[in-house]
Length: 598
Image 1 (cartoon, helix red, strand yellow):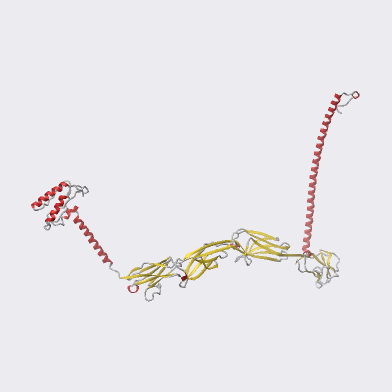
Image 2 (tube, one colour):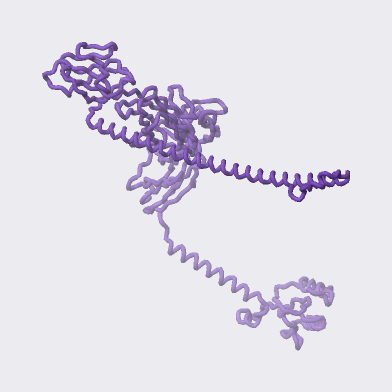
């Protein structure tokens, strides 16, 4: 080994134990290193081999894909060739359509008219169906018409489809088919459904407004049929909803509206045979009334008769309406409007009637009700009216609280009181929402004065109101106004004279109207002046006469100042006054307390 070669001398010498162990250790180390290198080389070689295998697999896969592409291309080319051949054949073939289970006659048009013996074949002339020496075949469904040499096939089957030809029995060369027979089937068993819906007893389907409806239609047909779904709504042209060239059609309508109500038809057509089969379903779209229920009472042409009217429009179908009185049913009907005539005498004033409406869609029920109260008319007017001769007057009469509404007529309390007043030149009548106005033109005392009757009437009762009209002659208005004015001036003059005569503040003005012996009121301004006046009065009385002068304060108090009690002094009293009255006045004057305020 490299680095471990032994010489002859060394080989002949016996090594000691330590040398042998060292030698063995070095040899083991050398083998381990070489073994490690060998393992590394083997691992590298294995990785290279794996890489080559992967590359080989990739190449093989690519080759397979290329081969598949080549095969597909070859098949495509072959299919195109077949199609080209088929097109060429079709251009020379006459297509005849037969239905499964039916009968078909194939004419022989490739031989002359003088040929009486022909053979029929399928696809190739070597595959004869009817030979020259036989009119029929082992399959009794195939027969030859001896007159026209045509091929008659009964009870057609789907497998009978293909290319048929005929040839002259004297002809030995190859013949080509000239007729292509296509056997169709259906459409059969058209199944049409609309869901979810409810079913009426007559089979009609119905749903509620705003629902989602699913349509499904299927049939069996060879080849695949054309399926169409049409809506035939009232007063509109047919509308096609969906169309496919398949055996099954499915679609949905969301938030269905009332205008989608009508007859839905699923039509299946065989595009080759033209055979068409259809199925029709009627669908109704129901919805509750969208208007509030309303009830009312009206009069009729007959007296003492009323009509109860209850309406709840806008629903489909019509709701059920019931009239009730005191919780007991009167009559009902399925309609958007319920009306009935009744004798008003069977009802009392203030009685309440109720109309109840019910509308059902499947399990959903909507209910509403209305009520009304019956009451007789109550006429109101002024009981007394006045009119001047030759002028016009208008009488008014109103009726309140009447249900049914009352009619107002006018009558005269004459020999025939039931004759109504008719509008004309003499009378004018205006009706305005419960109020009637009667205008009497050119009032006359002889013909117009008297009672007028306002007649309020409904199916429950009749009420009369009497109005008295007085017709007076016109007065002298100018003279009356003049008299009133003169009287007014006299009263004003009288009041003014009284004020001037009695007011002490206009004393000097009053002197002009008074005589020399009239009495005058004098105000005593102070206690001292009162005493002086008393002294002067006493002296004058002792002397047997009265003085015409009265002592006054040099500075009299203001009119709005303090005023003390005064005494009445008579200047030159008349002789008719008794001495007793004079003494009583003097005593009362002495007893007065000085300084007492008024």
